Image (cartoon, rainbow, N blue to C red; front, side, top):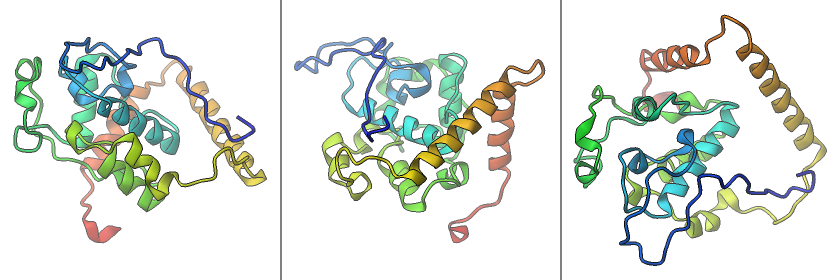
Length: 212
């Protein structure tokens, strides 16, 4: 808001997590673009770590002014996540092979992309924090909400009103978003195809850690 307050809304696909976490839950929760990998594999036992993944996807979208994983369906969603984050294996994600849908689908052997390449607009340390603590395939490797709030990345005064520069930046972002929406309405514009070409372009770039 104009008072610097973040408000949560749209709980259409939200579910109450019972205290008895051993009880089977529905995996059809959260909007597809923000659904965690374990939910995409139809996990029925999950935790608040799924929300942390969703938060990471939302923060990424705010940085790049577009969704990080814009899947058309559940299978396409999995493909888009793994082509960026890498294909999960029991070696990189112990226990993934026990999830209901893991053995039902197969994907190319993707290696993880450097998130700094995909989010060049973001602050280096913020993107590093995002990729190492939020967007982790293995839910056990994700940060907890309590730990995140203790991080310097979220250490701002509660309720601080945005500055004039903040509002100018916000208006600039909204202008870009509206421009993107207008482009999507054009007859021959295919955002999914554009996204695929973008990711393939990233994969063809010879990038090493020395570039950062």
